Length: 393
Image 1 (cartoon, one colour):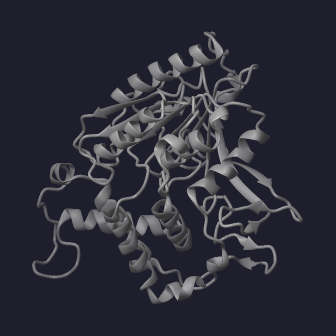
Image 2 (image 1 turned 180 degrees about the vertical axis):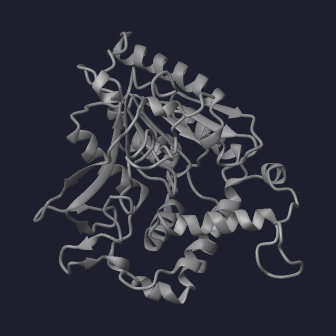
């Protein structure tokens, strides 16, 4: 792993694209219309003259558009900073990488914390339900705005993988390939149950106030507990044991109900750190979108996948118990039954679901080889564009 390699990208700025200006509406899957709609996004690298080197990176449940580089004044880089940059898996000397915050989010994209143009107050629970398909349809507007006819690849982990699969199904002629990482074609009852436990913890906080907490006290405790529940599922028994064991916090009194064990202290930190950056209502909406997602939706795979020529690389991790490898294998089995070019690779890792955010070496090798093969077979071999020095400062 190349430590802090994203510092070669340097300072990046989030950009914003707004569409569906009134009286136009962006029509959602449930036929509700909203507008205007804003998507926050970032780009890394340069689009080549042929516009054939664009890679759309799709974030997981609580991610955002800041995937690589640094924001001015901040020390922490983007959430996939060791995968996006010069010479990395998504080489910005070769590819133009785009990452957008999803519709329904709270990091610059339109969501429940945005102003309702009719009331000039935050939407709150008046915001319509959004689906994974709605998120993808909104991203299609952004890609069109950027002048890209066909994406070389869409890439995503967890909920991002759901979006990548939806891209391949909704816009098969606009996507040459898709990389689906630690994901599923639909949530199991257990996966829905974990999300529901988090939602109920949030809504049980009296400060949630039916979603009307803007300008008032935030439901911090409820959202923190929801994050704790979620974070437990992102790691594994092995990784937790290696990281914390049964070590206790220095000075903690025995048999009290504060965070005595190091793992308890860690979960408290994760919970309250999350409160500082995420809108509680967005958490409700986005987890619900993930739960409602079902690629098949009781339709035979051969029907909804028929005619797709998008090449799929599906990645799973052996220690992931939230999205276990069998779900990735199910995706590939469905694709192959419909004649879709799909391959599955199960990578050895004890880290758990979050392995795709921390285990880089094998992922890098696979993605480099896959993207080059797809580019050469789709657009023909071509030398990477020259790096623009001013972009890197």
